[in-house]
View (spheres, rainbow, N blue to C red):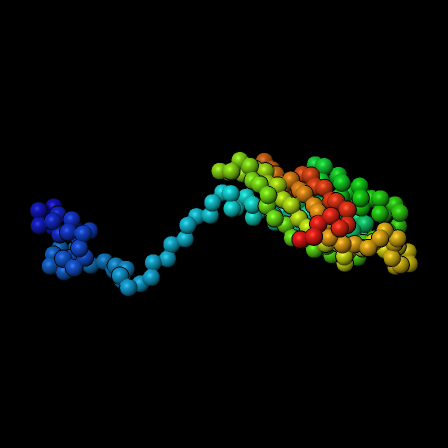
Length: 186
């Protein structure tokens, strides 16, 4: 490589206008126009990804439960998609009790999840979620005659859940607690 070519390459990095005065025997390569907008996207942070996936698992758990509750199917294969451990046991037992008592649930719960914490902060494996769930339109009915069960009106209820990252990389609700109707106002 000759000295003139080295100087041209060095100058090219500093001042793009000087390139026109330097010539090489190499074919020209297309370059990005300085007027073209630069688009860069920062890689998502592990904590953002974790909280999004944990929230999706939390919402998925309620959706799966609502689907199974229409027939009180405590053995629905959907239930294991987003719940495990104590959370799965709680859901299965509740649906079994409804099945045993001849009840089904109609409607859908509404959820308003909010992440309280994600641990450890740099690369979370456990996310705590709080919710002010609304069961106003998610009520129990007698399976035999379709009449409302005498379980009282639904409403807004405080819910806390712990969602953990499993060894396969999926997120699942491991525990949750639902408080009485009227326990939250937000």
